[in-house]
Length: 63
Image 1: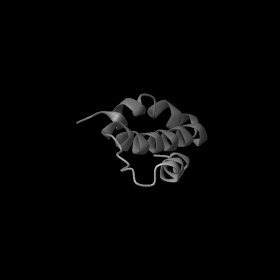
Image 2: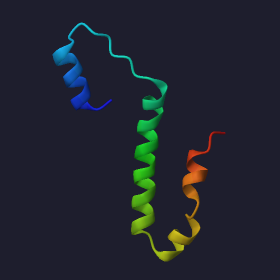
Image 3: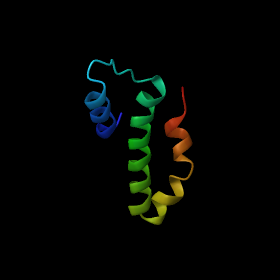
Image 4: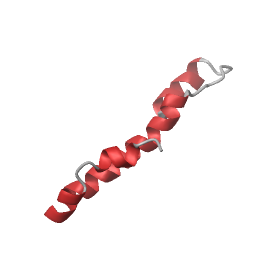
C-alpha cells in the first residue's frame, strides 16, 4: 500500500490492523515490471522494439 495510505490509517486508527489483500500484493511487482519493460522498449533501438512486441503478455503470463 502507498505510504500516504498507511500514514492516514495509522494516524486516524492507531489500533487498527492493516490487512493487504492478494490483489495489491501482486499488483506492486507487476507495475514495477511494466515500468521497466516500457523504459527498455522506449530507449532501445528498432531491433529491440521489433523483438519485444508482445513481451508484456509473456512476462505476465501465469505459468
